[in-house]
Length: 300
Image (cartoon, rainbow, N blue to C red; front, top):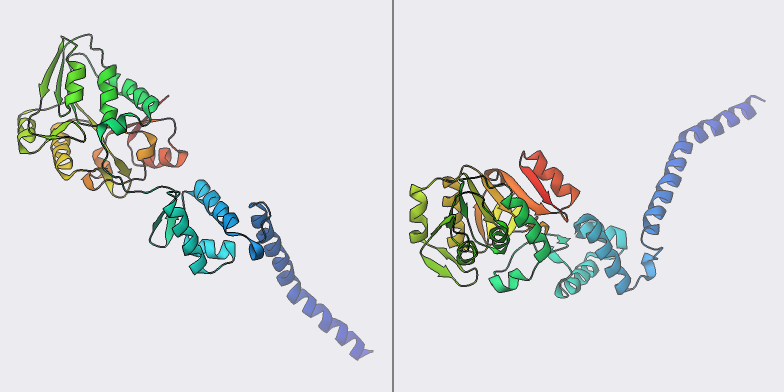
């Protein structure tokens, strides 16, 4: 009788030991199964290349970037297979590979002509320009840099009193020339054909004897770690002098500029006082800007 009781005690002890482990295993299995269900029930063991590509793009759209190691685990394939998939998708301009991960867009900006840029995000730029124009006060003195977004600003300026504008952009000066109560100081120097703006030491000389209430600055990229950027080193150097001469720096950038980098760095992100962008900006970016103490204006 004693042996029988000891046996049952032994069995109960083992059940108490291993039951939590078994339950945890069931929970993990069900969680992993649910994760796979998010991808239309694909069976990774027999998944086609097209199905893998679809999952990769879904992950990128949802998260913005994804690690190769995470894709290996999720797709249950080798790292070599994942890299081949990413290479194919990159050649199709669907993603950009960088340091063991993939991102949804190429973070590096190519220099494009002003005529090409004018055709991009036209509604968003007009809305941004309209919001920026509202910041101009009576009898103000401002500096306007280059870029198609500041062209939109110039088209929205309707001064009711005198306004002084120092401009690096030929299109901006041309647009504003129709207003008799705007005094325009066109900066001289070397003309950049791609942007129709001036750069160089001659351009910078006037900034040494001027002070502006506001600088309206167009950029090619806003990266919270790297800063604000453009595609030309000469333009970046001129922009730096503009920032030094201005009491407040206002960046005009459509939402596609966030998370991207141009070749030439203008300044750290903390050199910016206000960013004006469009309604396409993500909640994540909004929080990052607000956490940095930068005023964010979203143009509707």
